[in-house]
Image (cartoon, rainbow, N blue to C red; front, top):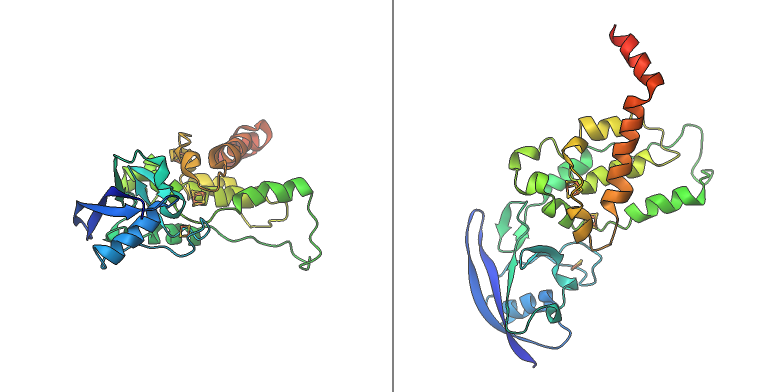
Length: 250
Ligand code: SF4
Ligand code: F3S
Ligand code: FES
């Protein structure tokens, strides 16, 4: 075994809980999730931790390490000073079920509110044709592993439970952007307008915190949210549609 490290871990269920201190052995190259597993094996077999792939691909092991949203399976202990106490807490934006496991169902509710891709009528799968640049644009967004770290960090909902109804968060605004930019999407509606009206795009003030924590390095703000805002502005303030809208109101 390598050295002993100090961990401070949130223990409790629902709104009740406390930070507890542990000392645990760590080997070179280990990640935070390894130490949580060792804690389960040595100190607290009832510690609730969600994980699956241990390879940064399933998005299950999200938590906050020293207050920063991170995948625990991709956070090496060597990042921290060996003398430091490393604090692991559940994602703050979602209700705690037990210990480090949160109820992330808010995200699934929001996912269901985005109408899916609508293929063009009369075109069979296999007959779709797209420019390579359009394929590449949405591929970046499709790297999302649904870890919900961007949702966790976004201040619009992190500090304001009351915004959750109106705001779908960066992950799902990005999904709307992906579909809005898809040249073959035949959705019966204006996705940019829906982002504003139904998903709360206006509440995003481009702080870019979502982009900073994304483990897939998706440029959520620059490549999805800002273009969505620009498309919306173009549509709303383009003089021709504006005149039509005005005439409709007169
Ligand atoms: Fe996680 Fe990034 Fe997807 Fe957000 S966009 S859920 S941070 S992978
Ligand atoms: Fe939130 Fe990202 Fe906008 S953190 S405020 S969705 S840029
Ligand atoms: Fe799958 Fe960490 S366990 S992303």
